[in-house]
Image (tube, rainbow, N blue to C red):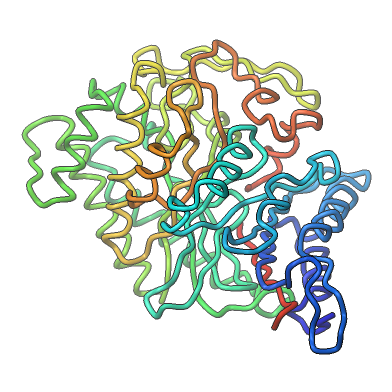
Length: 424
């Protein structure tokens, strides 16, 4: 067993400390030898899967421990690992306090048995799916926790969001600049590389948004029209003659100007779209209505969130907001594609933590082919968006037997050497 800092035992210490300091942790297990293989010393490997139970127990004990703590653990395995089928089919009852994520590349589309097993697990909510990612130098970077942040091993990242629902169109570019400056200055003050837990191979922050649905509603713009305007802007033929064009242009300028700030602070990656449901519900738009999460439309204009810890809380979104059902899956998918293209154009992009709508689309080979050929990098939770009540125990089936609200609300969100990464 490798006992150095980035080996298996080192990852246990890393996860323990990171959780106690309130961070989410992703543990990439793909460098562990397959179950049953022998090394040059004749030692037989147990494989990566059983070790997930150790990380689950860490998260159960260290997150609870009589106090309310931030943090979550996600175990990752590359789809080309020999134990991938054991990984995706692992009994969730044995690992109730962690999530699993499969890292794929386009070749997965030509492996029907493996693809089916991964899709079956994703449909049940047991796994998330991300594409393998590499930086400009060809070095592997790893998806973290809610899959929107890309880091090298042991790096960390700070997140914040622009409330578009509270921002007038002409204020958007400056809001992006101010938000990026805030994050970059705070990042310099954290001293995380002095803690002995994290490294600082790269510098990165994650500036995202919430309340796009509110902004569009207030300005009388449909999601469909905005997607068309943003696509035109991305391809250099945009116009500001329509309200949708004005919004797309303002957001485009926001990214351009904020990327200059990030460059001044030597950031490698700076833009993301993070899951913000618990965060967004704390804020309102210009007209006093609850802010919709990130770039997503609300599931309903009136939403009840039922939590064993927090009780039932009711929220009212702007009555002019389109709902997810009205927007439709294709428009939402294309919105995410165009938003990712805009982030990518800055050369400082993380990813979008994109839910897929299981009651408006079908995860099958065609679905996966479309996603694999898109600029998108991750598939997060399977959400049902046509319900009147956002029942998270159904939306997040993989952990329906635990307190799901606690799980999410606490998120800000060698042969035997797994990479362990931490975001948020």
